Length: 200
Image (cartoon, rainbow, N blue to C red; front, side, top):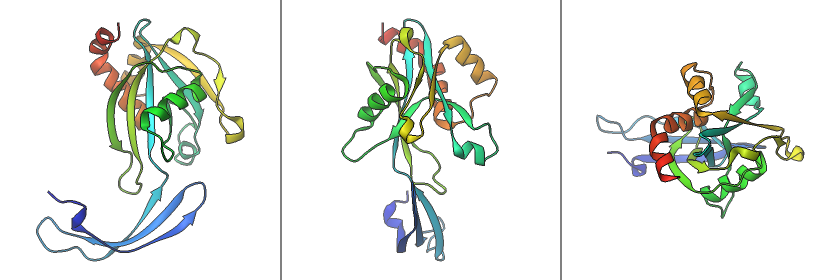
């Protein structure tokens, strides 16, 4: 199996630094059939690593989803207000679990109890370095509502509580258009019974 040692970086420069960063690599890598590839140039979108949590109430069998504006969805021709789960970028010195607890409070006014790891995956490895650490977090949905976020950071986040039956219908209708939310909801569909038994 190939490893990072099978890549030769010949040059790396930052070609853009704004809210996010773009680095340009000149590299070559070993080939499956043996030998080395020719030199290639690739740009990589650097936005840091993220953590996300699906807030779930096992007693009420309800899920909290948020809705907010996303410029990437607009640029891609999608409706720009997306239904999502709580997520945030991991700052230096923070753990993924610390991030989801902080973001749940900031984005949805929620306190996360127990957490269950779901996955750690690359969001778009063809051109971005970002990875996502994904959890399911126990919450009490009885007081979940309202508009949250930091207006000075351009956040305008609407909180909505959905029954599990409604979530199942969203999955069947293919109405979820972002990967992290889709992965989390599909995981819940596969693991809900066991999770409710553990979180009694």
